[in-house]
Image (cartoon, rainbow, N blue to C red; front, side, top):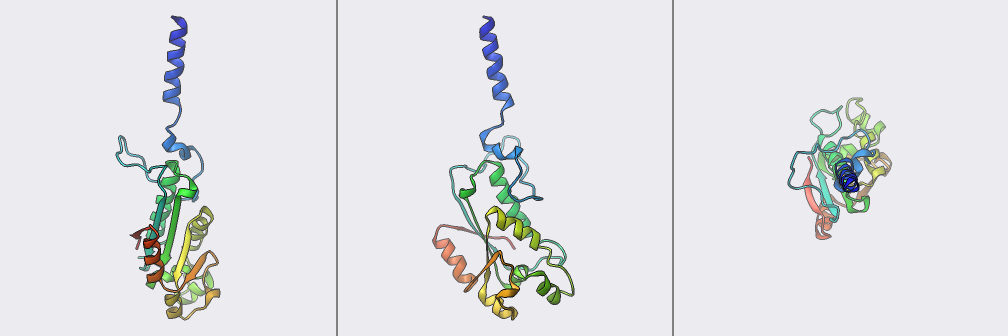
Length: 184
């Protein structure tokens, strides 16, 4: 009988003491430093599915509300990426593409060019873009927008690919099974 109690105590401790597999990443560093994952909610219904491949094309075509602050859309994308990681979605199941176009194309500029175009303000998005790219997020900018800004490839951050046209990029990604989400 004593052995039965010991086994029951060990099983209870194991069930209580070990984290759920869905939250395996929570004790580890998140892939995009400095950005929190979404806060868990008690008895949450829909949570990330570790078996799904999250193919998402994020569309950013608007300027930031404040020129000297990180774009809120970029922050939300980073939070979503970290939330998937926190819930155990493998890195190869997180396929994110961020497409800058129109006013959002300014975020793709290197700091020196950004400053000349924005009254001496630093590009506040560079560090986050670099962290996100290092984590596996793919960045694109509309080539037509780059031409419209009258800058060449050397003015674009090295982490960002220049595509022909955002319209082509976004429709191609949707046709390849990516969900299109407007992030600003």
